[in-house]
Structure formats: structure tokens, C-alpha cells
Length: 128
Image (cartoon, rainbow, N blue to C red; front, side):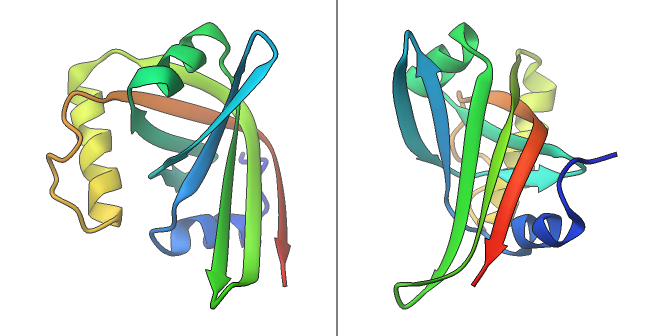
């Protein structure tokens, strides 16, 4: 059973918004934008570079998503969870296609990135 309230789940699944992934290694935070897909208490991203290296070193992450309209916040959801790097190429390709479909992007965009699954431990949300 998901720890994410049903209202927050609907918001997370509602539209293709940018998320910000927060990682921390050696006490230094790193926040970067990512595309994501959320379903059943798990967020999926595909990434590379520093974000991936940080997740490998410290799997405790945060994911923040916010919907604005003309500069006014409509809602925000923050997820805290544990990330797992998935080394399986078939799973990565399938996840990349799911994410790219959500954002109406080329299904093969971001080939070479690695799948990271985030099991959500807690969530906070607010609507305005």
C-alpha cells in the first residue's frame, strides 16, 4: 500500500510537470530537474552523470513537483524515498518509453541513461 495520499497521487499522475531530484553526498546537496513517472508508490526517472553517481553513493533522495499557473502555485508534492539503480537494460528501455510517453517525447530520447526507481517512504502535499 502506498504511503502517498490518494489526492497527492492524482496530482503526481495528472500531467507532465518537471520534478526536481534532491541528492546528498558528503553533506553537500545537489538538486537537478528531471522528468518522472509515478505509479503505485514508486517514482521512476532515467538519468546519468552526477545525479546517478550521487544516488549510487547515497540512495536517500527527495523528489519535488510543483504546478504553477502564471507564477501562482496551484499545488506541490514532496516525496522522500530510497532510490534503486536498475541495471537491467530491458527494464530501463521500458521505463524510458513510459516516461517519454508522458512528456510526449521521442520514445528513444535519452538512450544511454540509467533507470532509477524511488520507493516513496513519505509524502507531503499542499494545494493552494
